[in-house]
Image 1 (tube, helix red, strand yellow):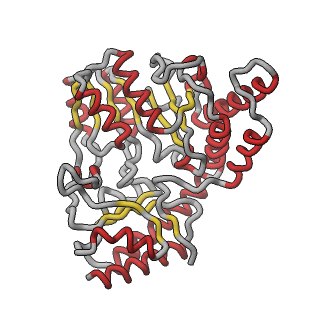
Image 2: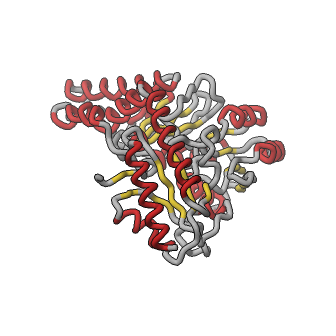
Image 3: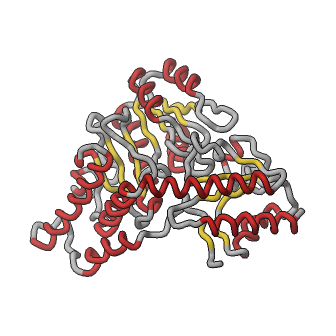
Length: 380
């Protein structure tokens, strides 16, 4: 058995068709898109075709798509510029957000720019929408930043419900959609949302490129200053190869989304079934085992307490299995999972996030479960 990759929530292998689309931009179409000569104009046209393609898939205007270096920059731009440009003094988020969101909001709160509120969570980590309504009622002109799909436990948020709440109270709504972009369809003519983000490497595109959707009604100023690129919204020469790869990856994802989802859901369901029936003492963190309410690409599992807990991921690695995880934090200085800590998952349990892609197979899932059984017997 070749090495098995089940860490697709961290990054995905590039699709060969994406690489093929990018190569000409590296080999011959090398002009600076800001140049007015033929070489530059050709590349500029390529960028705008990519922007138009992405906008079409998301059912929005190309004028609302801005290329960034990835999801982190896109999240930072939306949050920081909302606070600075809209006069926001209060923000609402959850303790389960990606650090690109949490650390940015915490920094702004520490600097005294905003008051930060955390919406309460249900037992399995879903957002308490009643509490969100209460927070918005008390702070109507606020920034709400809540992710669509949690990168660690896979819990899904209903963007339509939250978007409507934000509209009702005149709030700004930003959602980190990095984990769900290209895995779910986002119709931006229907969603009531101000900011939404994507990162190509999460759906078989290149690293170092992403985009920020900015609703035309939400006028912000640049986060990165410099040249007049991205319609004066982001300084810096464009990552042309990445932009082409991003657009191609999104096109491929949308064209095969239903087929790929069916395949990946079957893999996740198989792993859930085998783990549940063949191993004692396991727990599924958050709602990751609920195929209706969680990302079909993510399964987070806690295994029985063991003295070998710190070696669990290493044992998987030496058995040719690449996954990620880490237990809950045992102290404020631990580099553990803030998500699992917020959900009160025992730090004594080794926790692993398995995340799947269209390239994984049933045979790989069976191999992984067999190895988990073997590892747990040794460490019991």
